Amino acid sequence: MSANKRIRKSRSRTANDLIGEAAPRRALDLKQQVHRLEVEIATAAHYAAEHKHHRGGFSSKSAHAKGYGVQQRLTHSQSRKHQARWVMQVAMFLTSTCLVAGAGAWLYRFWLSVN
Image (cartoon, rainbow, N blue to C red; front, side, top):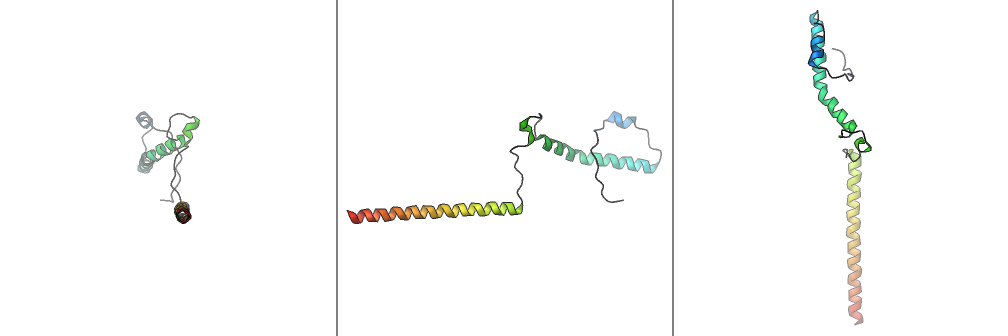
């Protein structure tokens, strides 16, 4: 068998469509037809999920149906950048908290020494 080939979307087929087709005359034709039907069955779930993704999970074609708010998985570098930013914000918060506490302690000692 040759290399993998991209299979184009085909319209959905009903049982009546399958019955209406002429019976294959050769065994090779039968094998090709069975393979084509197996491929259609295997890709049906993928095409349904792709169709749902393009609709944004909604049935209408409104502005809300364009997939806004759908969170995608971040790449490794993006997640590392996000984590580094979060660590930096935590460090800045702790530093600021220590500085405010130190200034408060210094003001309290100053107030005690004045009185």
